[in-house]
Length: 357
Image (tube, rainbow, N blue to C red; front, side, top):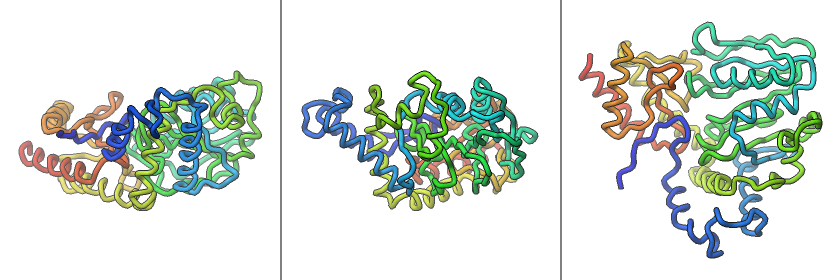
């Protein structure tokens, strides 16, 4: 079976090994005679899977014991709302505007109070990561977006603040090592580096959770999930099962540091083509802010970009068109995208350039 070179921005590539394991036991999980998608979330088999998934996350990310791990539905977009609903308890909430998803988070924050930009990269079309920040007194928290899928920028080092820090890591969680203790709450949709769409991983400091607003609908309160081990209602069982498989795969690769090394090598293959193309390919992100997850670039004209994407698709490359809001081209080289796929794309880019100079 020929597999596509999958560079989709999300849902995105998953490890073939994980897909094959899921396929093999899909009809009979743990010799129960049932598929995992048929089983009660109150069963002992699922309880063991649930607990192991949390433990794997804690081990791989080095999550301290004073942090809660939760599985929540609704995607990152619901987290935009939940974070503000629970923690926008003072006069202001601060957001660092590094692109579309940061702006969407800020828009949800407005439902619970006044928000402002602590910094923005909009002046240069979000091609860089701001390094200077202005926080007002009486600020509830500052919200960061670790990696910007649309513009292809990523924090290399995270700034420190004197207020709680909330971070959206949906598109680069477990792609590199981060110090969880630098954040009060981390959230990440699974569908880029950890599994299929359907579950969000939330990692929150217990003392921060204790400051949350409680006068909220049940399913908007983090305490509902924290106090019930994410089992207040039926969790997204299959998505969590696939996260579990993917975490085992990451561990088998050598852990987060090994994954990060591979990700850097993959991204370099494509950035090198861009940098050595004498302007044929124009990278969007400033070199010091380049994402290893989402590599964004332009060609001379929109027509040439359409031709590049079409010919790439014919050659087996999927998902190399830019986001509909900004156009251009994008290769998303998440954890499960193999090095061979990035080599093949780099070779295709070289060949396309030779034919179209």
